[in-house]
Image (cartoon, rainbow, N blue to C red):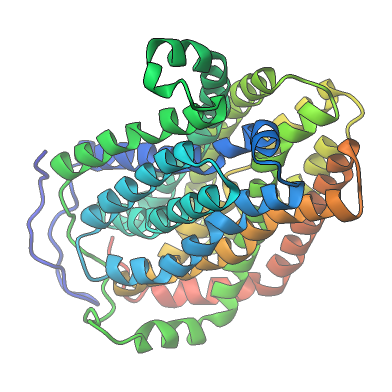
Length: 454
């Protein structure tokens, strides 16, 4: 697909720039990014619906299961995050994204062929390595497809991928579990595989087709908002930026990391809570959480962008801070209630309430970091955020619940207070950090106006 933009690179400061891409083409690009993000979430979190059969077949503990869900993925997700962010700022971002998608899709298929804890662990690390390129590349592309006044909405739509991916992971995982026996009957080569292995094969393969479509139809957009020349090898510019804006960047990143820790814990362990505490079947759990969470997630993604756009229009240069405050408060209240609710009905009501803001923080973090970071550093700064997310959010979100159930809240019912602890600590700590650094973000956002291009 051809875009309507010139190939020359815009200058920096007040230098003239070519017209922005055609709106229809820009939104087509976002649609591909939404699907890519959705596939990333599906391949990342579908394992949460497969905890019990994997534990039974591989004879592993909750802590080991938490390592598979958290550390195994987060290890290479963190290691590859900054190198891929560095590459995003210097190479063709579409190509980086397509190669990343191909890598983690093949690795997900590899999870389906694993027959031991170590093999599944290695496959999960490769899923993490591939997915490390998603957010830095996508964020950089969105910032060059839309002018600053429209980016919050575009980031909000991009975050729909999280809602689509989570819902699809639950629903498709449940359907795949139910269809596994029929599929093995139709394809004798799959006869020796367990049902959970077939689920991984089914969710991993479609990503390869999407990678091909992206490579063939999405052009590389022109880079804009350059505060200076693009550094080829030096890391000094990004270090200087982070040092100068440490409090602003730290506030946004830390609050985002804590919120993502809660999101990851919920995605990976809430199905287990319903299965163990409320005694639901895995397929019913996946279908219910997916069908309920998806519309709430859509509202969350779209409303976050709408809210920030309205706040920007009213002169609130610190607009990204407000959605993070709301989501943090939702985890502290509705999230904790979800885990401790005495009945599945009340748990679902609380889950729906928190889900209405479940994507606000990540949408706001990506919008805020793009707002205060020059183009030539965006991939690296977003990568720093994703590395921190990998080291803290994805690792602790998955393993913390497992550690608590194995050592403090022992027994099947222990997943309830363990998950409640993560909700309360993550939401409360985020609120404290936002109170500490909100004004610093406003100062950095004001300074960024000098090189921003409308």
